[in-house]
Length: 91
Image 1 (cartoon, rainbow, N blue to C red):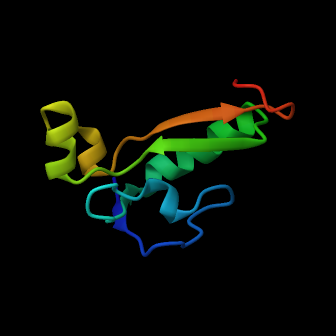
Image 2 (cartoon, rainbow, N blue to C red; image 1 turned 90 degrees about the horizontal axis):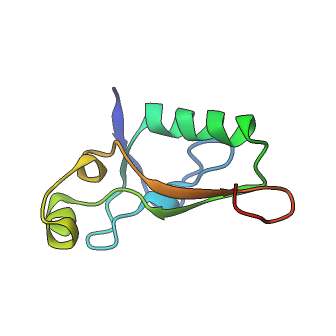
Image 3 (cartoon, one colour; image 1 turned 30 degrees about the vertical axis):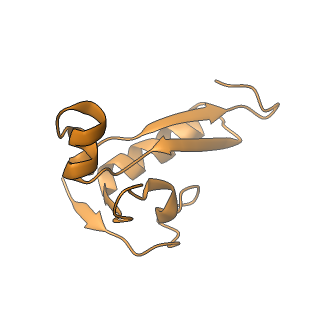
């Protein structure tokens, strides 16, 4: 699994920009290319109009502070998101 460090505001796929995955503590962006590919596949499969990433990469410090442990977010392997249909309703 390839985890990449991205610069801010880089289009990393058709529907996702690196800034959506930015750590709120340190502003680093490290995300798995496989995760982004799966997010794109799901976007197309559910025929979404948009996807909002509410939490992407979290540095170990921030993840521990928020959750008590460093989990998959701090490895660039997870994100919290919500997909919306063409009418703007949550899928």
